[in-house]
Image (cartoon, each protein chain N blue to C red):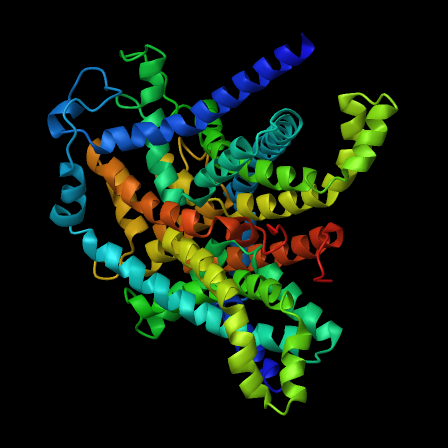
Length: 278
Length: 277
């Protein structure tokens, strides 16, 4: 009896939890499929009466947000490559070469401390720098700032992945007379590829979602990223609900796709590699 | 060494540059003259700063315990009662969905929930007339609405970490305790909590860091309003810097925040289970 009751209770709690979490997302998708006419229904509908992709076309084409989508992708890929390149140059020595423990701890601690810095405090001086060197409203400014801001995460993730590759494998190649560069290129790099890819996906997702820096360091659609465009849809004087919802859906789809590809690494990405799935 | 120092050195310089520039800027007026600590006295003498700190504290005091208790509770519930590996895996992936959604999109989602006229919450409550509840624009409610969004997004994060932690509890000690007649509560209190403690600190570390920087969804949902009831630290700095264009005062605030966070960080990492010490 007690067992049946507790099973029932569990089911009820879980179903309620799932509903609370899923319903807002459901309503977002539904709204993004509504026609303009349906927006004027006295009571908002829970199902689209005549589903249409018109809001998506309106967002991407009429409002010209497809160029912002492209900006987001360009900035995301470039900043990810830059962050991971630098992170690798820092992580390779601290995981593979004899580096003093104190230096190693200092590097890692310093990187972690950046996680505590609110972006707004940093963006105030960045704003001045970027305007002074003429990069205001230009993609390269975003690329550099994103790379710096995701460097701590990149360092911690790569450190975790590189540590998992046994030192002995490389040492065996070195004993056989290979140069360190050769051992690095033919032994370590292929083994590190999965970890690098996982880190790249996670960092890209963070770049994709970033809002504050782009909001402050850009001014026109030429350099705006997609989240800045979505923000415009939400805070404009009269919100066009279906367009706004479509913008939200587009912003969500890419990270969701990446989540499915890299689900084993998401938690590592969110906790600087502390939580690892075996 | 030869590889590490140049790269790391460059990175530290690039990352520290904003701080130095903020210090320089905070000592000059908006027309470029050296004004000493004038900006600091204006920044620290402004009551709105403390109002923002207080609101951020209130937000944290509401959001953090709720997320931790709910996440922990759900993790224990699933851990104890759901045996099916398929359901566990499904919950695992589903719980990651809110976390990976960009904050701005979360703002969009909850506009659709809380907005008057088109928000679904009032519709579900059967309340669409002139006296509908203004979730985002009446003072105590706006704070709760904004906080509920945080809870919606981050409770699953706590759940995932706690659930992962529960899997590391050795089944022998749990079984031994059960043979000794331990209740569900004593089993948690004396065995599982011991394994979860470092992870709880980890959750706190990341959640505090996030709460201190919260901006995106609040900006989109309330813009800091009504009045300044949801104007948290980041939104306040934003207003001073980019609405009032008072970059002198804003730079002073940025310097104060950076120093405060560094001190706070070094205090909190003493308790953190990492190798970064």
